[in-house]
Amino acid sequence: MSLADQGGAGVSELFAAIDRAVKAGDLWAASELADVALARGAEHPGLLHLSGWRLHQRGDYGAALDRLSRARALAPADADVLNSLGLCLHRLSRTQEAIQAYDGALAVRPAFAQAFCNKGSALRDSGDLEGADRCFEQAIEIAPNYAEPLAALAAASAARRDLSRARELAEKALSVSPKLASARLTLAEVEIAECAFAEARARLQDMPGSPELSGINRAIAASLLGDALDGLDRPQEAFDAYAASKQELRALYADQYERPGLETALQMAERLERYFTSSQANRWSGEAASPGPSVAATHVFLVGFPRSGTTLLEQVLASHPDVVTLEERECLAFAGAPLLSEPGGLDRLATLDEAGLAERREAYWAEVRRNGVEPAGRVFVDKMPLNSVLLPIAARLFPQAKILWARRDPRDVVLSCFRRRFGMTASMYQLTTLQGAADYYDAVMRLNEAYARTLVQDRFVLRYEDFVRNFEPESRRVCEFIGLPWLDTLKAFAETARRRSINTPSAPQVARGLFTEGVGQWRRYGEQLRPARPILDAWAERFGYPAD
Image (cartoon, rainbow, N blue to C red; front, side):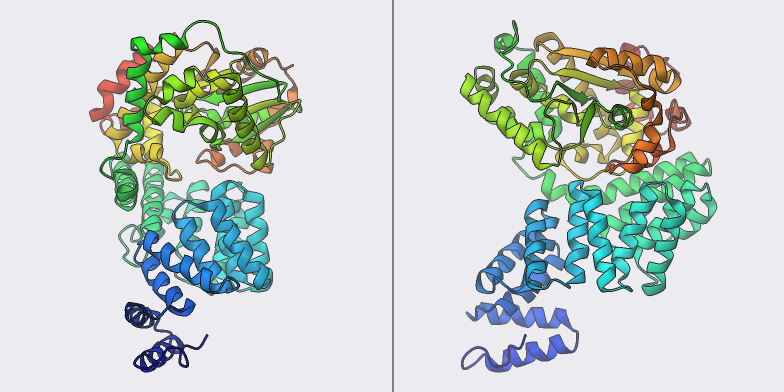
């Protein structure tokens, strides 16, 4: 796109200088000149695109979105603008809008490999891992030596425990782009999975502090380094690496989740607990609400706290032919979460009339279907651990639903939350410090004790430790609670997991099958957990776990 013939007197030379900078590959200089031109009153999609690119690179995504939206308004069929707009929307966690922008770019330019790759990343983050893989494969078909989609497919293969394929793709990506961080990280992940911990440590050693890497990649590198050091039985060094990873993430997301005046996930849980232990909660007691017309044959909310075994249990249930499951989608929040946050919202939720309940039920089921699941006539399992915070919504909209609660030793839970990597949300932000994770665990457990005293719901608690040690008897108990016949197919859950798209940190473990190594892991980190032990030990005692 040439700018040299744009503008009136006084700006033609500026446009020519921008053109020269773009042709020389100096986008920083071009974008700075674009800002000067915009400040002089010029309005051109090329200028806005350059300015938006620069703001995006600086991390000012809100301002970048403004520039790129203006560019799209002026040039709605500019594939490059639409692609950049998608990148910005994705950064702002507006993933579905990002996908729409990429689709717009591909409608204009069907052989746009970069847009396919970027759409694949957005689909992956939205949970559509199969769709993501197809996009990455299309990008490679268009551009066989395009390193980024090769690396993305390598990471997907590693998550499915197809380690040889992951290594092959990552090495091919590095042959094209030797410094590509994502491919290097996947190779380290493969080495860790193969117990080649010393090799992984050597590969990762310098990556967490590298200024050449993005903050996200530095965080991933530090976390993987922790895994390598853990495998080498160096718990203090491993813990320090995990802490560095969380510190990097905390710095990246502080502005988004710790803004003045913003209620944090911890504060929300504490506020809800105060409400449900006060006299205001009386209106929630008594008989359950009218259930409304049934969609699923049986409706199950699989909840708990992250890293408590919900993914394992979901994959086991998904192996039953009568069951359909939905993995970690915000459907319940979509239907009613604002009522938990707005002033007076809880009282309004408690007294919703049938029309209001029906509207929110329809919104919930529409969101379930939008995520690719048809629950009609099936046993439907909505697995979202921290729907445990949203149980008042379930109690009002779906009083007939069963609540399947996954419980695990609190010390293992919080340690695992601190070690593992999650997509960032307000709740996951609470896990970026050890004390923050323990405080949030404490708040969610106290809240759910208040819910259990007040809400009319059919609950079943499954202990992770019992499940992995006595799989068949415990899975039979779960099936009985849900109303399912127990089948031998449930034993093949690991194969089910390898075939399905799992977008949680538990995916590699579940694909291995049953394993008990995660039980009592906290003991190796007893010294590092000491600051959080008063909170965690109290819950361990209450739940019947041994003191040491």
